[in-house]
Every structure is written in C-alpha cells, then in structure tokens.
Length: 617
Image (cartoon, rainbow, N blue to C red):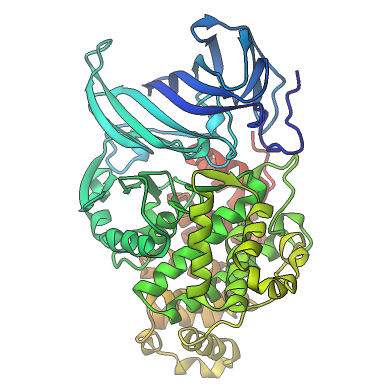
C-alpha cells in the first residue's frame, strides 16, 4: 500500500486520493482538557467509495495518539507510517470487509491530540485580555487540521460536519459552523457540551474551534462579534459596517450561502490578519484602530465566502485561485463602498507589497511563481503576498484587456456559479476563462501565460493604476527623500492634515522602499508627525521599521515590543528582521525571540526561527 499520492494528488497530503474515496461528512466529539492541553477526540468519517473493492484507506495525522479504529462498527486494523517533518504521519487503515464503488463506510477513529499540536494554541490566563481563564484557538490552514483530526487533509476533499464539544462551564465554545444549542455534560456536571452543524461542504482547513471566556454583540441581522469582554464593544464598533459589506458582495457575486457571518476577535498571538473560517471569521485585534480604517480586512474575509470557501484551490499550489480572486473581490467591494480611485489606490499599495515579497524571497525564487511547485515544500514556507497580489495583478490585467470591471465581474460571478462547492486547478480556471470569453480568444492568446504563471519574480506587465489618491503620498515622500539637511524646517504637522490614514500608510510604505533616511530626518519626522503615538498598527509597524532602518537606537526596544506584544506575521516578521539586520542589535533580536517564543503561535515560531537563523527546537 502506498503512502504518497499519485502526481495528480496533493503533494502536501498522504491521504488516499479523492479519486479512490472521499469524505462526505465528519461527526466530531471533543473533550477540551486545558490542564493537559489536549483534545480527547472521536471522529466518524462518512466515506464514499469511488473504486471497486476498496480494501484500505489512508488518512493524514500529525502527532495524534490513535486508540482505535472501527469501520461500520467493526474493529479495523491500522498502522502508522513513518513521521515526516511537516506532512505528519500516514494512518493506514485496513477495511475488515470488502467495500465497493458507490457504497459508504463510516470510519470511526478514537484519538487524542498532542499538547504541541500545530493547529492549536493553548493560552494561559495571563496571555488573555481578561487574565482569568485559559483560552484555546485553532488555525488549520494550510495543512494543520491533521494535528487535530485524522482526515483527508487536502483542499481537494470537501465535507459537511457536526460537532459536540465539552468544555468547562465557565467557558464558551464556538466553531466554523452554525450554533446548534448546548446542554450540561451528562458525564461531568462541571462542564457544558456545545453543539455545531455545518451543512455546507467545505475543506478540512476551514474547520475551526475557539474556547474561552467569550462574549458576543449583535452587529447585523446575520452577524455577531465574539471576543473577550475587554474587546467586544470596541470590536462591535469597528466592524459595524459588516452587513453593508455582505450586501455589496452579494450584489456582485450572488447569494451568501453560509447563513451566519460572525467575526471573532482573537488574542494578540493570532498570526494572521484574518482567517475566513465559514460562519466565524477570525480577526486579529490589531484591526481595532478605533476609526474603522482597517476593516477592509473584513471585506477580504467576506469575499472568501465565495472565492476560497465555495470555490476552492485543489491543492496549495493553486493558492492564487483563492487569494487573487479574493483580493480582486475585496477591492470591488471597496470600489462600491468608496470609489474607483480607492480601488486603484489599494491596488498600487498591493503592487508594493508584491515587490517586497519578491525582494525578500529573491527574484529567481520559484516560490514567487504564481503557480509554484510545492513538492517537498511546507506550504507555510511558501506563504507570502505573491498569490494575493500577483494573482490580483493578473485579474486586473485581464479586466483591462477584456472590457473593464463590469465585464470582468460578469466572468467572476459566472466562474463562482459554475465551480461552487468544488475544488479546482489553474487549468480548469483558464479553460473556463477561454470558454466564457470565446469571442475574445485572440486577445487571450496574446497574454504571456508562462510568464504570469510559471516564471518567478514580478509579473511581465505592470498595470498603470490611477494615481489620484497616491499623488499626495508620492509628493510628500519625494519632498523627504530629496530634502537637504537645511530644509528640514519646511516640514510641519499640516503635511498630514489632508491625508487619510490609508494615505499615511502609503507615504510610509514609499519611504521604506527608498534607501534609509539619515537619522536626523527620522527624528524630525517624529517631531512634526508624532508617529510614536499612533494606535493604527499599519502606521506603527511601518514607522518602527523606518526608524530601525535609519539606525535610531531608541526605536529598537519599541520595535521589539510591537513584534512581541502581538503575533501577526505581517508585522512581527519584518520588525524582527529589521532589528536582526541592525548588526549592533542582532543578538538582542535573537534573545527577544527566545524569551517570547513560548507565547508565540507554532507557525510563527517555525518561520521566525528561519528568519533569525535559530534552531527551531
């Protein structure tokens, strides 16, 4: 029996190919044990057999302790294959009876997660806002679900799920599903069982669980925000425009099929800006700027309800199908709610993020391909703005060639309707593009597809974006970079008066792209603009990087403080890297990482270890 899939399979999964058998439904039972930091679990997988005489099947696991396996209630023998650093361990199950094509078999696995499960972060009470109760949250993308559920852990397999979760009764559980009531745990009166149902088929990476001292507030007819009580009212204010974003998205791409759209604000160690778990978007507290200026992250996560969650990349090599389309849709929502100029402005900012990713990886690094090969590559190592922004740039380029935003949105909507509830590859997407625009095939044939898809570095075409909103930022950047030492008196607080926070962020991004400013310039910038007092995390992160880059020693402790008081990858990694590159403080960066790594998310620890050349163990 083989433990690796055929070439058509997912290079990141050991599980049986979805052409042999596919999971249709999961029934989960969890007992959340904070003392031991484990989930005691039982999962029943309803598996549909797609070949004649299925005698065995393989599931993905990672650091799971397997107690027993049953098939249709009969004991099934199983073996664990060799352990792989990021793919985990194949669980090979022999069927106790013959199963034929078209039949379904219920495979039940009783197991326990490891305290070090890569999908789970267990927080002590001290690591939460309330300081009273422990907290648990999961992050399964890309291939970490196997560390909390034995499953076909590949985005090519989609299933519904039902879950029952037993937790201490002073805590609340929520999942990426619709809440289905709660009751006292008959086995233990100090615990409650929360029930959840997710009727829409989805890939394993979207299963999510949170347990903590949570409160919620209604923010719309189908939306609530959830968080610890310290953040909940702030979050309700920040995300109050959720329903209008949802309605705008529905106007663009059709009905929202997931029922509820809730947002959960996590503790600061959550490594991403947001995560599009169905019915329960996860958000970082770094979005709570107090002025709703960073809520475009929510527009992004809302867009995933169609692009990613409904139409899904078949493997992580096609991740741009999820992210490029989602960025495109997010910016179309921004266009509808703000203006076309705002969309263009955001696209310009995205191009700079792409440039930074390409510079960080290296312009010849195959991980900067739009469709990279991930054979033998941990998808977490490939994570960057490339699939987002190179993907968006391609879609925007096609929009310009094929007749503008309205015409191209017609294609996007039709594409979503055709491929809804399935997982697809780039070739399938491209074939449909040619079918939909069959009267414009001559135009599509002129696109350099190889350069876009399979060539590292920046895209072959740089779109000409409307610079209306960026002009003021560019002018201010030029003024600083071209000023002589004697000209610093011309700068005043009034320079920023007419700029939105988005434009201030853009100004700082532009300055960061230039060679480092002399220290006296950065000190003057602080005098007139007082960026040190900004509560907007996008401004603060860029400002602190700028200070460290110009070797302002006073900024180093502040940069390391921001890098460790929250764990969003977008900020923490560049801040650590900037300090690490300041020779004099290199050891301090490493020391701070080692001091704080126990409070960091496992994904962050792995990536920062590589950035700072520290042994991950």
